[in-house]
Image (cartoon, rainbow, N blue to C red; front, side, top):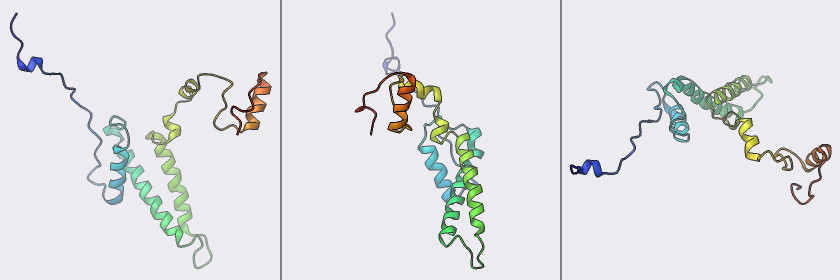
Length: 155
């Protein structure tokens, strides 16, 4: 049997083929900073190159929303007594931001699968849902025909 070379004996090192998405050259200033931060704060394989345009639009939307906030701090009512046009811009920007965040799977709701949540609870009907008040939990327990311990699950 021939001797193994030094290269054959060296530990195998995984080659990382995943590179993070880079901001497009057209994106500058605060939007570029937002783009870089979002990509850095998500898994390296979260975004594909095909997501670049959508993510670019999302970052510009965040910057525009910040501009709306600054303008509305000056006052919601203009000097002539009318509602500032920035209110409408802010509403449309928020709608866009929410829609884009869902498509990019950046919002908690879009990252969570309802089936997975049920599995995490273990399917135990005795556990209180996070959104349930103590009274709602008690009513659900009574309706289902089982009792619950007042000390557990009640606030």
